[in-house]
Image 1 (tube, rainbow, N blue to C red):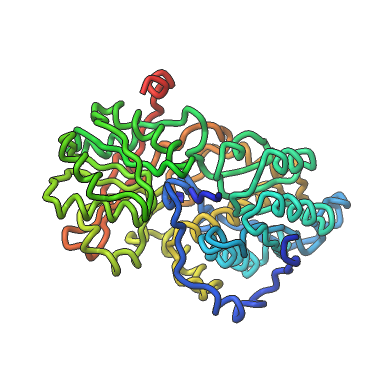
Image 2 (cartoon, rainbow, N blue to C red):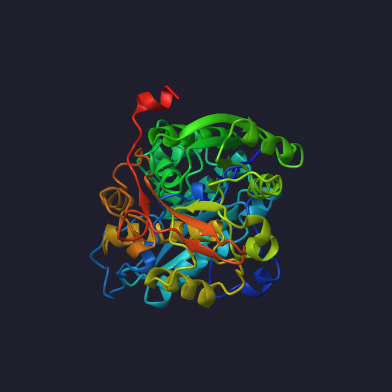
Length: 452
């Protein structure tokens, strides 16, 4: 993210960002794209923060002549930021297709109001091809040759080697938390991670219990480490609320038989189906179970589904639930309206506004902007890192539940749950246990996780 994760099995030339430059060319290449890997969608993008939807912009103009010179990427009227993402490289690049337009939309929105403290953000991007080696080369080139101030890393290719190098250089980085690495370096900023060890929370169990679920069968994709890790958090979450986990079964798309899962549900007398699988795979399993006459009180997918899935497969999805870390597009909150307006204005070629990759990419750019605002009119890399790390309630004006950036190892505890209507033609948000509508819970004790 789900985000909600995207799991992966010489970079392109640097392209300076200039207003609407290149949009017509990119428009033809953009379309409806979605990650098709295990545990993709909402759970990868947990606890994200779209601060730009509501935070005030530090766009005051004025002289910066008193600022210290020699800060990388900073001039009197501009600040240079790097973007690294997989623009080529097969399925990973396809999954990340909305990312660049969403990042640019957030930055264009900021520049349209004067930038940060009168400095326009100059975005330079590189393609990492979904390859860790190319990623390392790309970030080193941006930092050393192009002298960017900071980096937005919308990539699954960050390694300990590249993270360590960036920390040594003191470069602030915002981006998609696709591994535990993101929580281990002070200069790396994510907006919530499900990959922190021992990070189970009881929120999922709370939802299942509230929906009447008592006996759950967990389905995972054994080919995905992310799926396996996610199952290790879901099981103790369910048990913490008295929901019995009757078993765990493996399922690989295009290989496994959904009818076998349906048989297990019947044999184990399960009334709850939990999926840490690919998005399409869960729909197949769920539809097969319903066709077999199995009465499920809860069918919860870790993947996030958008309007396209409803249009194409709504009948098969009727009654199932899904989880996401941000407000549903079905709401008409001020934050959702602001996000939609920014995307339609500055990235009209992005047709899937509520694809989780689009949202988390907008978030990554927004968090970079927030850090620049907090760094002050004379920014340094260290002031960015120090001040952003002090933020303890990062809620994007309500689009996400508050998250504490000062504690990057804490588990994400708040989520949104959506349910497909009985007729299969719409989603509705299931009201949570907080005033903002989110479902929030508590950490599950480590003993309960290891004992599960």
